[in-house]
Image (cartoon, rainbow, N blue to C red; front, side):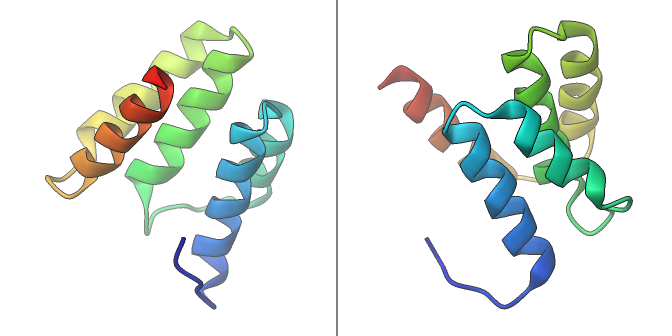
Length: 89
């Protein structure tokens, strides 16, 4: 993991950490504490979608995952590949 001083990336990494630990409510609390994730809509919507999926709030999860797919770039697909590999292991 790359160390960064960028608070936005650090908060996103923190939310991802809580999600990885099986704490989707904590991940969403971090995501909701920041009103504007416009600088990284793919990452924010992907994490929010995955957290809502963990909570079995499938309707909200789909909304976030659709937003993530619409804001994605080719670079973002490497993130998806990593997540899929993690899910399969």
